[in-house]
Amino acid sequence: MFPIGDDNSTRRTVPLVTYALIGLNVLFFFIEMTGGNELITKWAFIPSRFLANPVGDFLTLFSSMFMHAGWLHLGGNMLYLWIFGDNVEDRFGHSKFIVFYLFCGLVATFAQLAVGVGSDIPNLGASGAIAGVLGAYIILFPQGKVRVLQGQRTIQVSALIVIGLWIVLQFFSGIGSISASAETGGVAYIAHIGGFLAGVVVTFFLRGTRPVQT
Image (cartoon, rainbow, N blue to C red; front, side, top):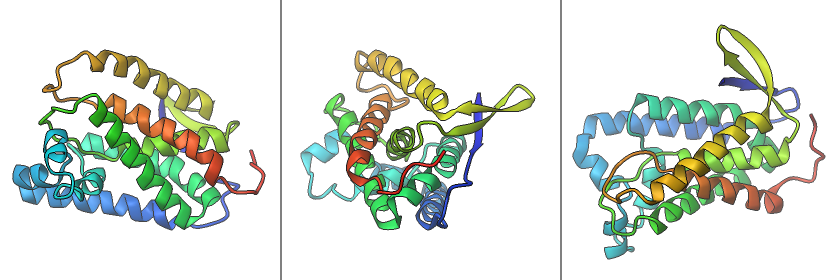
């Protein structure tokens, strides 16, 4: 199942922050393409380097959230942010949403750091922050529907199923990745899990007072 959209009929505001985040991620990716490996190494989050100099490497905690390893990495993340971010932003408000997004991204980074403290592999991507958005979505819109492509047709599926299958995959893959070598690159599943759990927990403190509409 490939998600392509959700129900925005209850959305009351223009998701300016979501659009800005998508724009920044795309912009950073083009900068990466022109800067090459040297720029990626400088601004990606590298666990061993950060632990050796946390103050000097502080900015990489944030810059790495806007970097991606390729077109598919960027496209997949931006699709999920576009589908789910606008509704969460509408509920939280613009200011709270950007704080929420960055916080989930930080938690995701530190979760990955915890299982790879000696790693020299660059960590980059918005996946951890977006995982937090998914966690918030299933709390705020538990009966929401997502349009997905199934073969050559479009069907409506519960958001709980779409996001639930995604997080189950992350948990099983994350358990397997813990035992893998810290020097092996790949998908940062633990970061996804950390960001998702942060999103679920923080949502109870940041969600608006307006009743959920489904």
